[in-house]
Image (cartoon, rainbow, N blue to C red; front, side, top):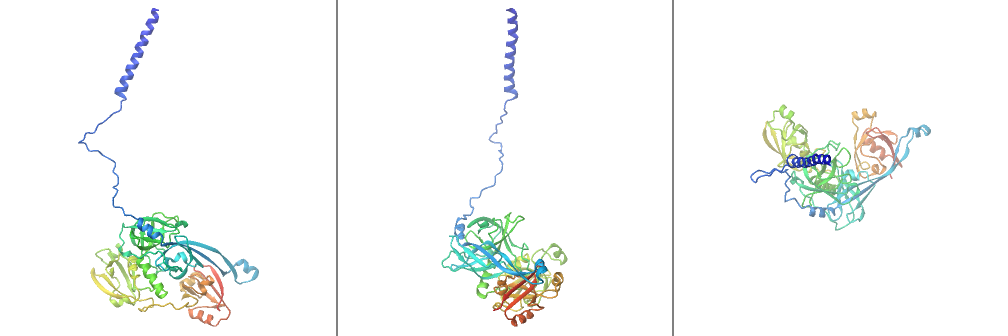
Length: 477
């Protein structure tokens, strides 16, 4: 018993000591540290972006514009004649008919008049055999091509209907960087889609038009645009049409940050020309130009990097007015121009015969000139469409350089293709005609002579710029 008592006492002291140790550790060593902040001490918060209270209400523009934007479905079909080495091995050197599989495409368009005129991109309807227009209310119509301009990528079509919702043109020159805009279209065949963004840049040249006469002065926005949006509307917050959505900057083929639209002021002029004359009246200033760079500014001792440099002056408006090579054009009709795209945009709004005010810097001093714009023939007359021309085609003699590259001795190239037998046969723009009815052609007059003296059918032989040989046959009656 005595021994048991001696064993219990140490155990009790150990238990009590353990509780004391635990209490001391909990209260002095493992206790949470609480720091109070006095009222006079500055409190630091993570900074949050300010949310403006005056964000624009885009619902009116969206609701109004969506009814005036249409879905365009196109179908391409037709036959053409082409060479085939296997066919020739068995049956000799002759043409055979290759059936082109039917192809379909889609895009958008904008109704601009209540009686059915619709503007879209040329690349949406190019080479289409059938054009179907689907309204926002699901009604469907057959579209008729009124005219197209590949140099600006604008086309005008018409449907037979009245009292349609339409958009009015706004002034694209008034657009400012940072201004809110809406892109309306049918991406991925998702009809009536509206996205919003701001104007990121103006007068942007992205080099998608290979023709040296092409006009690129795009409005750049960050509104989401995808395949199928081409030909759709870019509108401001007042629901005015300020551009036609045309392209995206993307490595994947889908939207990745920026989209580009043709300014409404250019679109309006192209539409007016096509409806009034059937052909675009392209005005030329008569100068060879380039952007002013730091190297040019240093070489020609310019006091400022601004404007557009005149490398050469050709016969015509600018030369007659007094503009000289090495001048720097800084404004047209009081609108500043700092890139070739901006200059082309301002000139592109005019017709031959129009007089524009041009301010240049020469020896770092400003000079002002009134320039009468000319047409491609060097005069101020309106260029009228001459029926179908040669079966609807405009042609030019192939350059020696291209002959050498393609290893041909002769040929005339189709530079512009309108409605006519050539297009109906499936011939594409850019095709080089080398032989007609087995006779070589060297000039356009050779083609006309052979056609005028032919009876029955016409055999066209030639080559495309990529080296593809092709043959086409059609009747002339």
